[in-house]
Image 1 (cartoon, rainbow, N blue to C red):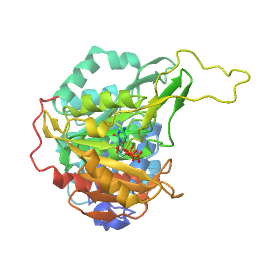
Image 2: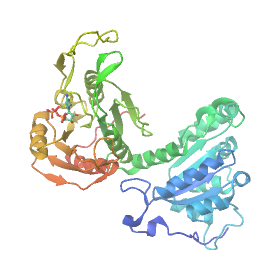
Image 3: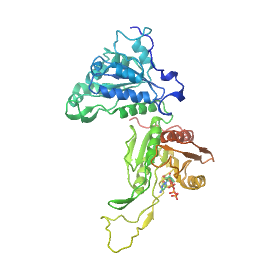
Image 4: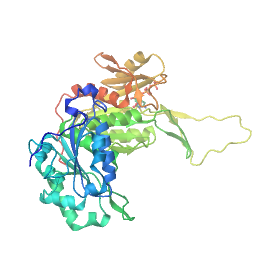
Length: 437
Ligand code: CTP
Protein backbone atom coordinates (compact mmCIF):
# COMPACT_ATOMS: atom_id res chain seq x y z
CA UNK A 1 0.00 0.00 0.00
CA UNK A 2 1.53 3.33 -1.00
CA UNK A 3 0.49 6.86 -0.30
CA UNK A 4 1.89 10.38 -0.13
CA UNK A 5 1.62 12.40 3.04
CA UNK A 6 -1.81 13.93 3.47
CA UNK A 7 -2.55 16.41 0.70
CA UNK A 8 -3.96 19.01 3.02
CA UNK A 9 -6.07 21.78 1.62
CA UNK A 10 -5.61 23.72 4.83
CA UNK A 11 -2.43 24.02 6.83
CA UNK A 12 -1.61 21.33 9.31
CA UNK A 13 -1.92 22.58 12.88
CA UNK A 14 1.65 21.46 13.46
CA UNK A 15 2.91 23.99 10.88
CA UNK A 16 0.91 26.96 12.09
CA UNK A 17 2.39 29.30 14.72
CA UNK A 18 0.53 28.68 17.99
CA UNK A 19 -0.83 32.23 18.13
CA UNK A 20 -2.54 31.76 14.74
CA UNK A 21 -4.28 28.51 15.60
CA UNK A 22 -8.03 28.59 16.18
CA UNK A 23 -9.23 27.62 19.65
CA UNK A 24 -8.32 28.65 23.16
CA UNK A 25 -4.75 28.76 24.53
CA UNK A 26 -4.46 26.02 27.14
CA UNK A 27 -6.88 23.68 25.35
CA UNK A 28 -5.06 20.33 25.15
CA UNK A 29 -6.57 19.77 21.67
CA UNK A 30 -4.97 22.90 20.26
CA UNK A 31 -2.16 22.00 17.85
CA UNK A 32 -2.76 18.25 18.27
CA UNK A 33 -3.33 15.70 15.54
CA UNK A 34 -6.56 13.78 15.97
CA UNK A 35 -7.56 10.80 13.84
CA UNK A 36 -11.34 10.50 13.79
CA UNK A 37 -12.55 7.05 12.75
CA UNK A 38 -16.19 6.89 11.66
CA UNK A 39 -18.12 3.64 11.32
CA UNK A 40 -21.54 3.06 9.80
CA UNK A 41 -24.41 4.14 12.01
CA UNK A 42 -27.20 6.66 11.69
CA UNK A 43 -25.26 8.58 14.36
CA UNK A 44 -22.65 9.34 11.66
CA UNK A 45 -24.20 12.76 11.19
CA UNK A 46 -23.04 13.66 14.69
CA UNK A 47 -19.47 12.77 13.72
CA UNK A 48 -19.59 15.82 11.46
CA UNK A 49 -20.15 18.00 14.49
CA UNK A 50 -17.37 16.20 16.36
CA UNK A 51 -15.01 16.93 13.44
CA UNK A 52 -16.10 20.56 13.33
CA UNK A 53 -15.62 21.05 17.07
CA UNK A 54 -12.17 19.48 16.93
CA UNK A 55 -11.13 21.81 14.10
CA UNK A 56 -12.52 24.80 16.00
CA UNK A 57 -10.49 23.73 19.04
CA UNK A 58 -7.34 24.05 16.92
CA UNK A 59 -6.69 20.36 16.17
CA UNK A 60 -5.60 18.92 12.83
CA UNK A 61 -8.24 16.32 12.04
CA UNK A 62 -7.82 13.38 9.69
CA UNK A 63 -10.95 11.36 9.15
CA UNK A 64 -11.01 7.66 8.28
CA UNK A 65 -14.33 6.10 7.22
CA UNK A 66 -15.44 2.50 7.02
CA UNK A 67 -17.26 1.57 3.79
CA UNK A 68 -20.58 1.44 5.66
CA UNK A 69 -20.00 4.93 7.12
CA UNK A 70 -19.86 6.29 3.57
CA UNK A 71 -23.40 4.97 3.06
CA UNK A 72 -24.61 7.32 5.79
CA UNK A 73 -22.49 10.40 5.19
CA UNK A 74 -20.46 11.64 2.22
CA UNK A 75 -16.68 11.96 2.63
CA UNK A 76 -16.99 15.40 1.04
CA UNK A 77 -18.77 16.63 4.20
CA UNK A 78 -15.73 15.72 6.33
CA UNK A 79 -13.36 17.13 3.72
CA UNK A 80 -15.24 20.43 3.82
CA UNK A 81 -15.09 20.62 7.61
CA UNK A 82 -11.50 19.50 8.13
CA UNK A 83 -9.93 20.76 4.90
CA UNK A 84 -8.29 17.34 4.56
CA UNK A 85 -9.03 14.39 2.34
CA UNK A 86 -10.66 11.57 4.33
CA UNK A 87 -9.14 8.08 4.24
CA UNK A 88 -11.53 5.53 2.78
CA UNK A 89 -10.06 2.77 0.68
CA UNK A 90 -7.17 0.67 1.97
CA UNK A 91 -6.30 -0.30 -1.57
CA UNK A 92 -6.59 3.15 -3.10
CA UNK A 93 -5.23 5.54 -0.46
CA UNK A 94 -4.67 9.08 -1.62
CA UNK A 95 -1.02 9.94 -2.09
CA UNK A 96 1.89 7.80 -3.11
CA UNK A 97 4.66 7.70 -0.57
CA UNK A 98 4.61 5.53 2.55
CA UNK A 99 2.01 3.28 4.04
CA UNK A 100 -1.03 5.50 4.50
CA UNK A 101 -2.42 3.80 7.61
CA UNK A 102 1.01 3.58 9.26
CA UNK A 103 1.72 7.22 8.45
CA UNK A 104 -1.67 8.26 9.82
CA UNK A 105 -1.26 6.06 12.91
CA UNK A 106 2.22 7.50 13.56
CA UNK A 107 1.10 11.12 13.26
CA UNK A 108 -1.89 10.71 15.61
CA UNK A 109 -1.69 12.23 19.09
CA UNK A 110 -5.01 10.59 19.84
CA UNK A 111 -7.48 8.45 17.93
CA UNK A 112 -11.23 8.64 18.41
CA UNK A 113 -13.79 6.32 16.84
CA UNK A 114 -17.23 7.95 16.84
CA UNK A 115 -19.63 6.40 16.22
CA UNK A 116 -18.28 2.92 16.92
CA UNK A 117 -20.74 0.20 15.89
CA UNK A 118 -21.04 -3.27 17.44
CA UNK A 119 -19.26 -4.64 14.39
CA UNK A 120 -16.41 -2.12 14.72
CA UNK A 121 -15.96 -3.00 18.41
CA UNK A 122 -15.80 -6.65 17.43
CA UNK A 123 -13.20 -6.02 14.73
CA UNK A 124 -11.19 -3.80 17.10
CA UNK A 125 -11.24 -6.45 19.83
CA UNK A 126 -10.01 -9.14 17.48
CA UNK A 127 -7.64 -6.92 15.47
CA UNK A 128 -9.53 -7.64 12.27
CA UNK A 129 -8.02 -4.79 10.27
CA UNK A 130 -10.29 -4.94 7.25
CA UNK A 131 -11.01 -1.26 6.85
CA UNK A 132 -9.11 1.99 7.26
CA UNK A 133 -10.53 2.71 10.73
CA UNK A 134 -9.57 -0.56 12.42
CA UNK A 135 -6.36 -0.73 10.39
CA UNK A 136 -5.26 2.65 11.79
CA UNK A 137 -6.42 1.77 15.32
CA UNK A 138 -4.33 -1.39 15.24
CA UNK A 139 -1.32 0.45 13.84
CA UNK A 140 -1.29 3.36 16.30
CA UNK A 141 0.30 3.68 19.71
CA UNK A 142 -1.74 6.83 20.43
CA UNK A 143 -4.50 6.64 23.06
CA UNK A 144 -7.71 5.23 21.60
CA UNK A 145 -11.16 6.44 22.65
CA UNK A 146 -14.37 5.00 21.31
CA UNK A 147 -17.90 6.39 21.42
CA UNK A 148 -20.27 3.50 20.70
CA UNK A 149 -23.68 3.89 19.05
CA UNK A 150 -26.07 1.00 18.50
CA UNK A 151 -29.43 -0.36 19.52
CA UNK A 152 -29.82 -1.16 23.22
CA UNK A 153 -30.12 -4.89 22.55
CA UNK A 154 -26.88 -4.89 20.57
CA UNK A 155 -25.12 -2.95 23.35
CA UNK A 156 -26.38 -5.47 25.92
CA UNK A 157 -25.50 -8.51 23.78
CA UNK A 158 -22.91 -10.79 25.43
CA UNK A 159 -20.62 -10.54 22.38
CA UNK A 160 -20.57 -6.73 22.64
CA UNK A 161 -20.04 -6.92 26.40
CA UNK A 162 -17.11 -9.28 25.90
CA UNK A 163 -15.57 -7.01 23.24
CA UNK A 164 -15.97 -3.96 25.46
CA UNK A 165 -14.31 -5.78 28.36
CA UNK A 166 -11.40 -6.83 26.11
CA UNK A 167 -10.92 -3.31 24.82
CA UNK A 168 -11.18 -1.72 28.26
CA UNK A 169 -8.58 -4.16 29.55
CA UNK A 170 -6.30 -2.97 26.75
CA UNK A 171 -6.64 0.62 27.90
CA UNK A 172 -9.27 1.80 25.42
CA UNK A 173 -11.46 4.59 26.88
CA UNK A 174 -15.20 4.34 26.34
CA UNK A 175 -17.26 7.50 25.98
CA UNK A 176 -20.85 6.43 26.60
CA UNK A 177 -23.07 5.27 25.08
CA UNK A 178 -25.84 7.13 26.89
CA UNK A 179 -29.47 6.21 27.47
CA UNK A 180 -32.06 7.95 25.34
CA UNK A 181 -34.13 7.67 22.19
CA UNK A 182 -32.57 5.27 19.70
CA UNK A 183 -32.92 5.12 15.90
CA UNK A 184 -35.27 2.15 16.32
CA UNK A 185 -37.68 4.44 18.18
CA UNK A 186 -37.07 2.58 21.41
CA UNK A 187 -35.51 4.14 24.48
CA UNK A 188 -32.46 2.56 26.06
CA UNK A 189 -28.67 2.60 26.39
CA UNK A 190 -26.90 2.82 23.05
CA UNK A 191 -27.20 6.43 22.00
CA UNK A 192 -24.05 8.24 20.91
CA UNK A 193 -22.78 10.70 23.53
CA UNK A 194 -23.32 14.31 22.43
CA UNK A 195 -20.45 15.75 20.35
CA UNK A 196 -19.57 18.40 22.94
CA UNK A 197 -19.05 15.74 25.62
CA UNK A 198 -17.11 13.50 23.22
CA UNK A 199 -14.70 16.32 22.46
CA UNK A 200 -14.43 17.14 26.18
CA UNK A 201 -13.59 13.50 26.92
CA UNK A 202 -10.66 13.82 24.48
CA UNK A 203 -9.46 16.92 26.32
CA UNK A 204 -9.68 15.10 29.66
CA UNK A 205 -7.68 12.16 28.27
CA UNK A 206 -4.99 14.37 26.72
CA UNK A 207 -4.77 16.30 30.01
CA UNK A 208 -4.33 13.08 32.00
CA UNK A 209 -1.65 11.90 29.60
CA UNK A 210 0.59 14.95 29.69
CA UNK A 211 -0.80 17.79 31.83
CA UNK A 212 1.30 19.51 34.50
CA UNK A 213 -1.30 18.83 37.22
CA UNK A 214 -1.49 15.05 36.77
CA UNK A 215 -1.77 13.38 40.18
CA UNK A 216 -3.13 16.54 41.85
CA UNK A 217 -6.62 17.00 43.26
CA UNK A 218 -8.13 20.44 43.02
CA UNK A 219 -11.32 21.51 44.76
CA UNK A 220 -13.07 24.55 43.31
CA UNK A 221 -16.12 26.23 44.83
CA UNK A 222 -18.51 28.01 42.50
CA UNK A 223 -21.60 30.23 42.65
CA UNK A 224 -23.27 32.32 45.28
CA UNK A 225 -24.56 30.60 48.41
CA UNK A 226 -28.30 30.68 49.11
CA UNK A 227 -29.34 31.37 52.65
CA UNK A 228 -32.93 30.32 53.22
CA UNK A 229 -35.42 32.77 54.73
CA UNK A 230 -38.32 30.34 54.31
CA UNK A 231 -39.02 27.42 51.92
CA UNK A 232 -39.37 29.75 48.90
CA UNK A 233 -37.08 32.72 49.59
CA UNK A 234 -33.39 33.12 50.14
CA UNK A 235 -30.59 35.69 50.45
CA UNK A 236 -27.95 35.40 47.73
CA UNK A 237 -25.78 37.44 45.36
CA UNK A 238 -25.05 37.89 41.65
CA UNK A 239 -22.38 35.19 41.27
CA UNK A 240 -23.08 33.03 38.18
CA UNK A 241 -20.55 30.31 39.02
CA UNK A 242 -18.89 30.67 35.59
CA UNK A 243 -15.49 31.60 37.03
CA UNK A 244 -15.34 28.48 39.20
CA UNK A 245 -16.43 26.21 36.34
CA UNK A 246 -13.83 27.75 34.03
CA UNK A 247 -11.07 27.11 36.59
CA UNK A 248 -12.31 23.54 36.98
CA UNK A 249 -12.22 23.04 33.22
CA UNK A 250 -8.71 24.43 32.95
CA UNK A 251 -7.53 22.18 35.82
CA UNK A 252 -9.16 19.15 34.15
CA UNK A 253 -7.40 20.04 30.89
CA UNK A 254 -4.07 20.02 32.78
CA UNK A 255 -4.68 16.52 34.12
CA UNK A 256 -5.91 17.26 37.66
CA UNK A 257 -8.69 15.35 39.41
CA UNK A 258 -11.24 18.07 39.93
CA UNK A 259 -14.16 18.47 42.31
CA UNK A 260 -16.55 21.42 41.98
CA UNK A 261 -18.61 22.32 45.03
CA UNK A 262 -21.36 24.28 43.38
CA UNK A 263 -24.55 26.17 44.10
CA UNK A 264 -25.45 26.56 40.40
CA UNK A 265 -26.64 24.11 37.77
CA UNK A 266 -24.25 24.88 34.91
CA UNK A 267 -23.38 21.83 32.74
CA UNK A 268 -20.64 19.85 34.49
CA UNK A 269 -17.39 19.73 32.51
CA UNK A 270 -16.82 16.11 31.41
CA UNK A 271 -14.60 14.26 33.84
CA UNK A 272 -15.20 16.67 36.73
CA UNK A 273 -17.09 15.61 39.87
CA UNK A 274 -19.76 18.08 40.97
CA UNK A 275 -21.08 18.25 44.53
CA UNK A 276 -24.24 20.36 44.68
CA UNK A 277 -24.86 22.52 47.73
CA UNK A 278 -26.97 25.51 48.56
CA UNK A 279 -26.02 27.34 51.77
CA UNK A 280 -22.63 28.39 53.17
CA UNK A 281 -22.95 25.79 55.95
CA UNK A 282 -23.51 23.03 53.35
CA UNK A 283 -20.67 24.37 51.24
CA UNK A 284 -18.34 24.35 54.24
CA UNK A 285 -19.09 20.66 54.93
CA UNK A 286 -18.68 19.67 51.25
CA UNK A 287 -15.46 21.69 50.78
CA UNK A 288 -13.90 20.28 53.93
CA UNK A 289 -14.81 16.73 53.00
CA UNK A 290 -13.40 17.11 49.45
CA UNK A 291 -10.27 18.88 50.72
CA UNK A 292 -9.37 16.05 53.12
CA UNK A 293 -7.74 14.38 50.11
CA UNK A 294 -6.82 17.39 47.97
CA UNK A 295 -3.78 19.50 47.08
CA UNK A 296 -5.46 22.80 46.21
CA UNK A 297 -8.61 24.68 47.22
CA UNK A 298 -9.78 27.51 44.98
CA UNK A 299 -12.61 29.41 46.67
CA UNK A 300 -14.24 31.13 43.71
CA UNK A 301 -17.68 30.98 45.35
CA UNK A 302 -19.33 34.14 46.60
CA UNK A 303 -20.22 33.09 50.13
CA UNK A 304 -22.91 35.06 51.95
CA UNK A 305 -21.40 36.57 55.08
CA UNK A 306 -24.67 36.16 56.99
CA UNK A 307 -27.66 33.82 57.04
CA UNK A 308 -31.09 34.20 58.64
CA UNK A 309 -30.85 33.11 62.28
CA UNK A 310 -33.73 30.74 61.60
CA UNK A 311 -35.35 29.62 58.36
CA UNK A 312 -39.15 29.62 58.69
CA UNK A 313 -40.70 26.19 58.17
CA UNK A 314 -43.65 27.63 56.28
CA UNK A 315 -43.77 30.44 53.75
CA UNK A 316 -43.81 33.77 55.59
CA UNK A 317 -47.06 35.62 55.03
CA UNK A 318 -47.59 39.33 54.65
CA UNK A 319 -49.43 40.64 57.61
CA UNK A 320 -51.92 43.42 56.93
CA UNK A 321 -51.15 46.65 58.67
CA UNK A 322 -47.45 46.02 59.35
CA UNK A 323 -45.16 48.58 57.79
CA UNK A 324 -42.23 46.20 57.42
CA UNK A 325 -40.35 43.38 59.02
CA UNK A 326 -36.81 42.50 60.03
CA UNK A 327 -34.82 39.33 59.57
CA UNK A 328 -32.28 38.42 62.24
CA UNK A 329 -28.98 37.40 60.69
CA UNK A 330 -26.10 35.38 62.12
CA UNK A 331 -22.59 35.16 60.72
CA UNK A 332 -21.67 32.30 58.38
CA UNK A 333 -18.49 30.30 58.95
CA UNK A 334 -15.41 31.40 57.03
CA UNK A 335 -15.07 28.38 54.71
CA UNK A 336 -11.57 28.94 53.37
CA UNK A 337 -10.19 30.03 56.72
CA UNK A 338 -11.71 27.07 58.60
CA UNK A 339 -10.63 24.38 56.10
CA UNK A 340 -7.66 22.49 57.62
CA UNK A 341 -4.38 23.40 55.94
CA UNK A 342 -3.05 19.88 56.48
CA UNK A 343 -4.57 17.06 54.45
CA UNK A 344 -3.91 13.35 53.88
CA UNK A 345 -1.80 14.48 50.94
CA UNK A 346 0.25 17.11 52.78
CA UNK A 347 -0.33 20.86 52.71
CA UNK A 348 -3.47 22.35 51.19
CA UNK A 349 -2.69 25.30 48.95
CA UNK A 350 -5.47 27.87 49.26
CA UNK A 351 -6.47 30.36 46.58
CA UNK A 352 -9.00 33.03 47.52
CA UNK A 353 -10.99 35.53 45.51
CA UNK A 354 -11.77 39.08 46.45
CA UNK A 355 -14.68 40.71 44.65
CA UNK A 356 -14.46 44.37 45.60
CA UNK A 357 -16.17 47.61 44.69
CA UNK A 358 -13.46 49.90 46.18
CA UNK A 359 -9.84 49.80 47.41
CA UNK A 360 -9.29 46.58 45.45
CA UNK A 361 -5.63 45.90 46.19
CA UNK A 362 -5.63 47.00 49.85
CA UNK A 363 -8.73 44.92 50.65
CA UNK A 364 -7.47 41.90 48.70
CA UNK A 365 -4.03 42.00 50.34
CA UNK A 366 -5.40 42.08 53.85
CA UNK A 367 -7.90 39.29 53.03
CA UNK A 368 -5.14 37.06 51.64
CA UNK A 369 -3.42 37.02 55.03
CA UNK A 370 -6.58 36.64 57.09
CA UNK A 371 -7.78 33.72 54.92
CA UNK A 372 -4.43 31.86 54.98
CA UNK A 373 -4.30 31.99 51.15
CA UNK A 374 -1.07 31.77 49.14
CA UNK A 375 -2.73 33.46 46.15
CA UNK A 376 -5.49 36.03 45.94
CA UNK A 377 -7.47 36.73 42.77
CA UNK A 378 -8.88 40.23 43.01
CA UNK A 379 -11.46 41.73 40.75
CA UNK A 380 -13.38 44.96 40.61
CA UNK A 381 -17.00 43.91 40.32
CA UNK A 382 -18.12 47.38 39.27
CA UNK A 383 -16.60 46.79 35.78
CA UNK A 384 -19.41 46.32 33.24
CA UNK A 385 -17.42 44.23 30.72
CA UNK A 386 -16.19 41.59 33.19
CA UNK A 387 -16.99 39.73 36.37
CA UNK A 388 -20.47 38.60 37.45
CA UNK A 389 -22.32 36.65 34.74
CA UNK A 390 -19.81 37.53 32.02
CA UNK A 391 -17.65 34.99 30.13
CA UNK A 392 -14.68 37.30 30.63
CA UNK A 393 -12.87 38.65 33.64
CA UNK A 394 -10.16 41.18 34.42
CA UNK A 395 -8.25 40.23 37.53
CA UNK A 396 -5.15 41.04 39.53
CA UNK A 397 -3.37 38.04 41.02
CA UNK A 398 -1.50 38.70 44.26
CA UNK A 399 0.77 36.24 46.03
CA UNK A 400 1.83 35.96 49.65
CA UNK A 401 5.40 36.91 48.72
CA UNK A 402 4.25 40.37 47.63
CA UNK A 403 3.98 39.63 43.89
CA UNK A 404 1.30 41.36 41.85
CA UNK A 405 0.11 40.65 38.28
CA UNK A 406 -2.45 42.90 36.65
CA UNK A 407 -3.97 40.79 33.88
CA UNK A 408 -5.88 42.23 30.92
CA UNK A 409 -9.50 41.35 30.10
CA UNK A 410 -9.56 37.69 29.08
CA UNK A 411 -11.89 34.70 29.02
CA UNK A 412 -12.60 33.09 32.38
CA UNK A 413 -11.00 29.90 31.01
CA UNK A 414 -7.80 31.89 30.33
CA UNK A 415 -8.00 33.38 33.85
CA UNK A 416 -8.29 29.79 35.11
CA UNK A 417 -5.05 28.88 33.36
CA UNK A 418 -3.35 32.06 34.61
CA UNK A 419 -4.24 31.08 38.20
CA UNK A 420 -3.06 27.49 37.68
CA UNK A 421 0.19 28.74 36.10
CA UNK A 422 0.89 30.37 39.47
CA UNK A 423 -0.42 27.44 41.53
CA UNK A 424 1.83 24.89 39.79
CA UNK A 425 5.24 26.15 41.04
CA UNK A 426 3.89 26.41 44.59
CA UNK A 427 3.14 22.66 44.58
CA UNK A 428 6.66 21.69 45.43
CA UNK A 429 6.34 18.18 46.86
CA UNK A 430 5.68 15.37 44.35
CA UNK A 431 2.03 14.38 44.11
CA UNK A 432 1.09 11.67 46.61
CA UNK A 433 0.31 8.40 44.85
CA UNK A 434 -3.27 7.20 44.76
CA UNK A 435 -4.71 3.75 44.55
CA UNK A 436 -5.36 2.86 40.88
CA UNK A 437 -8.96 3.49 39.79
N1 CTP B 1 -15.08 33.14 51.79
C1 CTP B 1 -15.23 32.00 52.54
N2 CTP B 1 -16.16 31.95 53.53
C2 CTP B 1 -16.91 33.02 53.80
C3 CTP B 1 -16.76 34.22 53.07
C4 CTP B 1 -15.82 34.25 52.06
O1 CTP B 1 -14.53 31.02 52.28
N3 CTP B 1 -17.81 32.95 54.78
C5 CTP B 1 -14.05 33.19 50.75
C6 CTP B 1 -14.58 33.55 49.37
O2 CTP B 1 -14.95 32.40 48.63
C7 CTP B 1 -13.38 34.24 48.75
C8 CTP B 1 -12.71 34.92 49.96
O3 CTP B 1 -13.15 34.20 51.09
O4 CTP B 1 -12.45 33.33 48.21
C9 CTP B 1 -13.05 36.37 50.09
O5 CTP B 1 -14.46 36.53 50.04
P1 CTP B 1 -15.12 37.93 50.29
O6 CTP B 1 -16.60 37.77 50.31
O7 CTP B 1 -14.55 38.93 49.36
O8 CTP B 1 -14.55 38.23 51.73
P2 CTP B 1 -15.19 38.42 53.11
O9 CTP B 1 -14.27 37.80 54.11
O10 CTP B 1 -16.58 37.97 53.14
O11 CTP B 1 -15.08 39.99 53.27
P3 CTP B 1 -16.11 41.17 52.95
O12 CTP B 1 -17.44 40.54 52.61
O13 CTP B 1 -16.15 41.93 54.20
O14 CTP B 1 -15.52 41.95 51.81
